[in-house]
Length: 222
Image 1 (cartoon, helix red, strand yellow):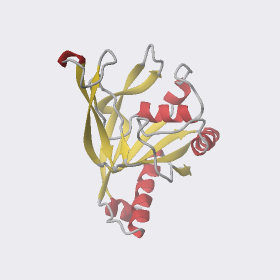
Image 2 (cartoon, one colour):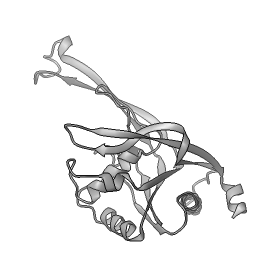
Image 3 (cartoon, helix red, strand yellow):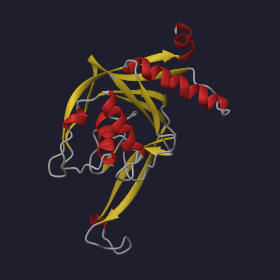
């Protein structure tokens, strides 16, 4: 199996799996459904297209920088009224959460042929790509490459490589990072997409485990 590593970084990101109409939150790391949606968009698929092949792919995340959670509160009015003319019961408030200045390295485990096809689609997407919401564009480099080690080992090395590259550019190196991987026990995430259809959005659950790693000890170990 091969692992395609993509780098999700930008001023803002949002990966909500439990948002409500008036309060749209974000998880602290990319959801599998969000990355599958990003990949499906790059491939030119619509919300009504089958995504079962993408949902079956192996998936993991290295949390290089978790960023900061920020909140944006907005006001809307009903009945096409202006805010000044709207009555109190015609005004409502809703909020959106974002991750600011976060950096994630996501691994997609698949065959070499699939990895190359997905890489090409991400580099030359059928539509504009965004990090969870349309207002969240990604920064470059978007694709880190295709690797032939296990998903966990690939993500460890991708995180160490990110640390080294940023240190060369004058950034303070990180001491620790986290991996979010599928597991037989741990946290339940409802982020396996079954359907993105606007009429019937449906998601299944998976168990994940979050592991902490120290850069120094991991690099010495290898």
